[in-house]
Amino acid sequence: MFNIHSFSLFQEMLSFRDVAIDFSAEECEYLGPDQWTLYRDVMLENFSNLVFLGLASSKPYLVTFLEQEQGPSDMQSQEAAAMETGV
Image (cartoon, rainbow, N blue to C red; front, side, top):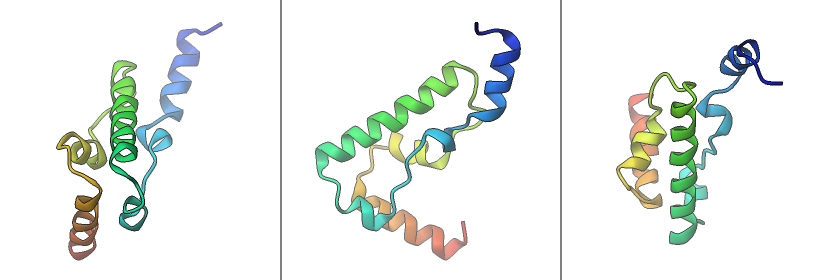
């Protein structure tokens, strides 16, 4: 049975990073428009579920990026910018 103690242990063990799939810019090139849309929808739904459960304390950059409805081609420019700034 699920109880409060189990939930607090669950909170400590699960984060967005645990349920997210990170594609490199090169990997994103292989995603078609429908695959990218599916990826975007699943990642946003995963984050939404964590928020609902009270398991998300802040919004990861990936979620912000996907909420802006940017595509796989934008991932390359974002990755390049992150490398230049050291982020």
